[in-house]
Image 1 (cartoon, rainbow, N blue to C red):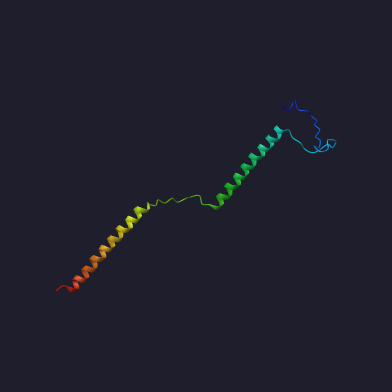
Image 2 (tube, rainbow, N blue to C red):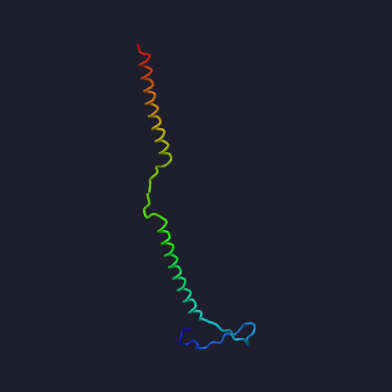
Length: 103
């Protein structure tokens, strides 16, 4: 129903007592859906803007991304470095013991 075919004056009566006229602001269903849709969109835009502004104040704009090697690679690298340090320590100790006990 477009606006030209809608009646200008509509009387709304109470469902329990049809002799009582209900007064107030009433809207056609199409108008109501349009008004609610506009209010929803503006509220969403306002909430989004408020959230973006709040997030911009709290969080830094730069993010540091670090690459972490997989656990197996880190474990193998740690074991390898440990063996190298152990071999170096054994070599040092052997050199010190050998220099003390050599004739």
